[in-house]
Length: 256
Image 1 (tube, helix red, strand yellow):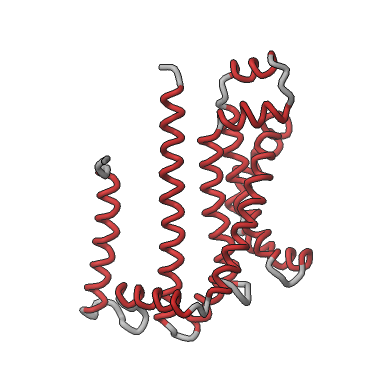
Image 2 (cartoon, rainbow, N blue to C red):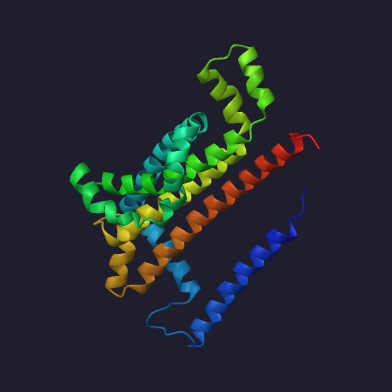
């Protein structure tokens, strides 16, 4: 059985130490008890929220919106990265926009998206899509540019069409970079959708956190926040582990 790596132990120690410090600080009154509750009470509130099932509809609403946004961004971002790799002139035109995309306050598009899609979940899904598609496209482009030319020449010699070349050569060869794009897409989609629900929506995980905050319901607010942190943190750790293995496999395949 493999022993845990030193960086992993340090991360776990940092998280556990931070939680214990917050617990002691809140119990000792170093932190205002009106605005902050101990982590142990947050855990109890999170378990109570899951057992009661009161917020299951809001949780599933947020997860389904994020999943739809991620799937759309992955598909269109991957195709966009391939297109930019094959069309250098288009890439030169789009490059400045890609470099400055995350400097744009994406939430300013929400009123326009409401006019286009109506008062439903699609404006939030569109926000998540717009916020995450560039990360997928850029990472796909980086991966495609690093494919060894001999593989593409071999595909041409075997008379493989564009679709077969993409599925059997470009995608496997650029998979570590594409997976990095998928990981960032998930993160950015959740940021946009939770933020949109917090500020602009009338339902969902972010809305319930904001509602509890406005009503000084600290147990519910911190319980929901803890559930969100645990879920996103777990997904991120799993994706990071898979990403690390993909990059290791790529390095092992590359000639010295």
